[in-house]
Image 1 (cartoon, rainbow, N blue to C red):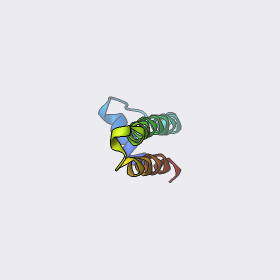
Image 2: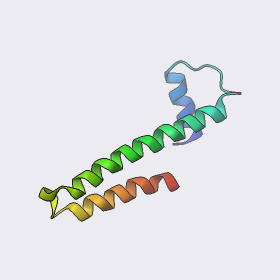
Image 3: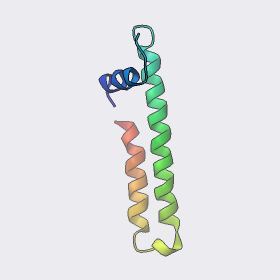
Image 4: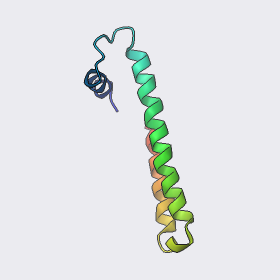
Length: 73
């Protein structure tokens, strides 16, 4: 998510002044994105551990790792 994305989304929800809030908005966006990534990765972990998904379990765990790695970019 870029700074422009964050500002665009902030405008969509009614923020009008960014000068003193830029850094806080970016920090908030990073926290929200990290939380959402982790929730998605947990779903993959659950699918990978499901005994009925033996055939695709490894792929589900790989997906979870890839989702978590997006936060390291």
